[in-house]
Length: 327
Image (tube, rainbow, N blue to C red):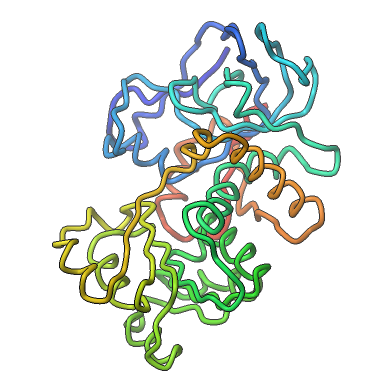
């Protein structure tokens, strides 16, 4: 099969085409003929060699795929060859930038006919991340307020939609003009362009100095401690990334200033709680099928244009998901 490997850490030139043996499923594994693979910021981090977890090069990356079941291993029930599915490739698995990938059965989601393969590749990681941020890592309730950094990105858009369903106040920040248009269309109450105004001043003014109940921060850097300053007493911040750099501040005294809390987050940890992962899948699928949740596809790139896809994602001008059309 054809696959795209990251030969070594570095620029887009490290994304190279290779021929690899077709994967064979072990027990409780599924091989998928990949139609579309989604691009995530973690793909950029893995390619550049800055991902928090170690990456063994050469590596096939790609966290989300859609396609059809090619073959199944022992102990797999409820799936059969030819069935339309989407999946998160999971830790230690062969990534989705390939014509075939092998996935643990727990990470495979059957796709109803009403959900396209394009949407199938776009939604799993980001919408399940949004669901568990608002329901597992924190219990967002009606009347709460949430500040979402990078609200125009895929996770931010999913958080916006699910938070609006809960009748909460949604505030977001973006890094440039126009990137918040989709979030506003989904109902966000305030979107702040960080390149044009100070987000702390803007949030303080909008909330009449009250602050927010929850911050979802994918930026890190000097954004995270300033965001904690915006929390109400007993408010909660969740850090999910370091796109603006690794945060470097004295955490303990910062949290003691207003009895606030700070958490890290990894969506796959929901697998550790019996029934929790499936509950998230069921909820997200229900929202997708009812039309109360969507994951916009901002662009589809041919398999051969993977370097262009990475350049586009790195431009930080994308609102939605970028897909690689594998077959």
